[in-house]
Length: 195
Image (cartoon, rainbow, N blue to C red; front, side, top):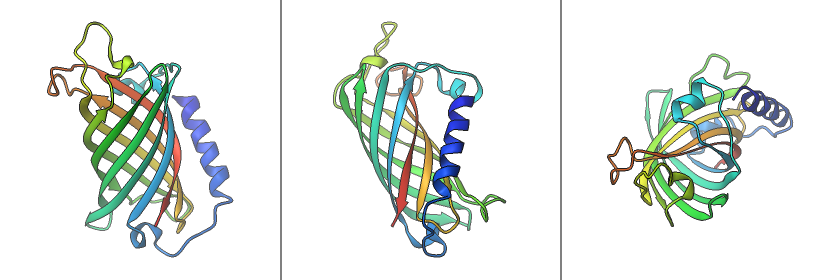
């Protein structure tokens, strides 16, 4: 995870130094966002992604997401709706469709240098077939599962372009969805544009 974080941070800093600046208050003036990202599968549990070293396997996804801010709670917290189209390849081959509500925190003391946001999204995920990587240990598997998103964005102040680091998580929420107790995790990065 440390290597991923430092590589992501370095790539973001280098790219942000050449991105053009947009109109003032880009995050507020442009409620729509289009995000493209790629991710790699990790067999580790969600908590291990945040707090421990983890491993990766040869399964990937490419995603295109569109979201729109629909409300604000004060100046710092935005509420968004997001839809995702996801293609899996490598050890599993299928499509995935996700719909979620996202809570995004915008206020950080360093935003005058690097505009930053942290987001958590909650919704549903539909896979066009039962994902092979979710079939293990004779567990129940379902095409319909819960979806969680964790995202860090970094941008040049006032820019409409931004870098995104994402965790893409599908799970049965401890058996709530069709008795499924497992799921899958992907860690990735991409870029987005506000409009």
